[in-house]
Amino acid sequence: MHQWDFASVLDNADVFAVGALGTLRIFAICLVAGLSFGLVVGLGRYSQRRVFYWPATAFVEFFRNTPVLVQIIWFYFALPILMPFSISPLAAASLGISLNSAAFSAEIYRAGIQSIDRGQWDGARALGMSFLQAMRRIILPQALKRMTPALTNRAIEIFKMSTLASAIAYVELLQQAKLIASLNFNPIEAYTAVAVIFFVFLWPMVQLTYVLERRLARDE
Amino acid sequence: MTILKVSGLIKRFGGNEVIRGIDLDVEKGERIAVLGASGSGKSTLLRCLNFMEMPDAGTITLDGKLVGHREAELTLVRQRIGMVFQQFNLFPHMTALGNVMEGLRTVRRMSKPDAEARAERELARVGLADKAAHYPAHLSGGQKQRVAIARALAMDPELLLFDEPTSALDPELVGEVLGVIRSLAEEGRTMLLVTHELGFAYHVATRVIFLADGTIHEQGTPDEVLKHPRRERTQAFLARHKEFSL
Image 1 (cartoon, rainbow over the protein chains, first blue to last red):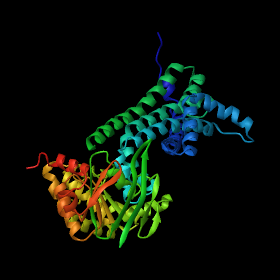
Image 2 (cartoon, helix red, strand yellow; image 1 turned 60 degrees about the vertical axis):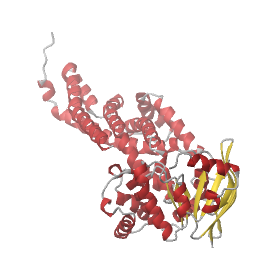
Image 3 (cartoon, chains in turn green, brown; image 1 turned 30 degrees about the vertical axis):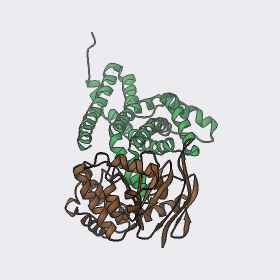
Image 4 (spheres, rainbow over the protein chains, first blue to last red; image 1 turned 180 degrees about the horizontal axis):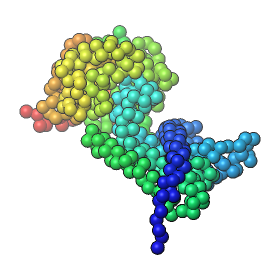
């Protein structure tokens, strides 16, 4: 029977704190980059014009059908061989997670935009609005509301995907747990602590999305 | 003075030719009622006039200037031709006032106080000054359509297109919308109106056009077309409409 000993973990709270900061940093970067680039790709997927549609579609298909972990490792180990510069673990992991999130969120944006009644386009265009004006003022505000639950799910995914960055030794929670486990020979406690920390971060976030969903459903 | 001149207009959807060569001159101050069975091309004709649908052939001249080639120009044309839809197409995330202000703010780049003042005037004109802060979800069908009319009027259009503006309304709400349209007619506004309200067409229109199979089958004064139709299909259409009238 294992004797649980969390003292060795608590002693290393500062190490976890550094890891938590790293996790939050990559989460913030990937959330902003992934969801905003996803909007651009989503608009491309929605476009009738081939010059926009085909590259966006190729992008989505490629990044949806390859594992994020492979992308992160590829950006970190393979890209610097092809290019005349090296790349930091943060940059490589951010690229992989952001591009993957962009591909998935693009489909959320496309579906959300498509779900808006054609009459809304008619109403906007009849006033003399350009495509971009109609999109910005009329279509997106309504579509974003419908997309909120799906997009918050993406955010939660991104948060959890950040642990993949440990594969290239980016300093985040899981990476720090590895470090603590190897120094104190307490993998059970160290990795349990990581799971608990993630739960403590994510559970309130998920509850918030439930509240948000109910609110939006009421407004409809 | 001819505001709008349409010639040889053709519109196809897939292999289906919906508008088959329509010529039409709209004079300033004219009120043209467009009648026809469903599928005769009434709505498509209207939607081609402000390029909500791109015509496949033919020309449209607005105030003597040939229009309809560049997208940037189409948005300008649509600012000058107002349109009111069967399903209102109000923006549900904006109040009644916000709906009426939207074109002024986003398209005309008018300042907020100016747009607000203008929008309030337009809402008052359609009798909805007290509903300015209401969202469309909290308005009746008739009120929604009046907001939609105010929204179109705010842009000061030279020509107004009404695409079956009362067809989606409960019968008891039709009157308030027709009342607003009649008051616009009395102001001398130029308008094209696709409608099934024959009585309204008779009393308000200066000209009636009967469409069949995507062509103008018969046209003339309301008295000529509605009371003394010369052609068989017009007669049959009117007979069907009168079958259950009191």
